[in-house]
Length: 241
Image 1: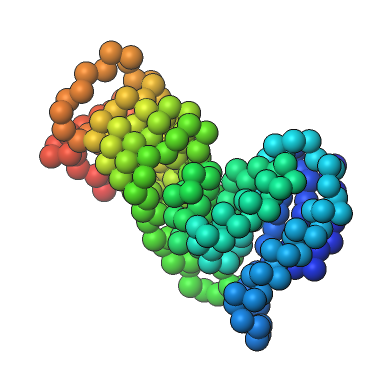
Image 2: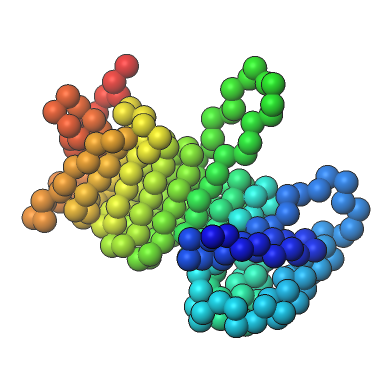
């Protein structure tokens, strides 16, 4: 069952054991100062949560649906602080903007970057999604989802996950989970500086890595072959045509 409460500028929906905080899409006709509009949005959220205080159990998870809004770390922290006042915990950020996805991941939140909706009646296919580039270590419990390639300069700790419709490049140690070609692309690859994971996935294929897997001392690429997922050195790898 879904419960929805009207807000002046945001929407709240309780669904699947979490609270969805949905920000309004950008209004191109808006004439107010951007900072003033954001302060009003925060105030509206705070007032509505105060009216609904104690409706949710302590540390109830929140998914922020930012849509096409460009949010920075300061704005995300402001929303998280308001939610925390009412024992709510911001955990996920769903966004159409790559910059917002980077800011959210840098702040330690799980991220789902959804592609913008294509224009109706257009004969032009949607543009290829630019890669999502992150410079950090993913901590346990963090999940990154992106409709293109993901490039991570850092480690993927146990309990964290990267899911990409395109390729995944991890310039660090993969100890968590990586799933490339998640939409079914069997040509997708995972490039890893050091592999410490127990499992990697490409499209619908899964490979289990032995616990005593030796470190080759050079980057490797996981890709699909007729025999399943295999690891190949960067110099030896050739993408299939």
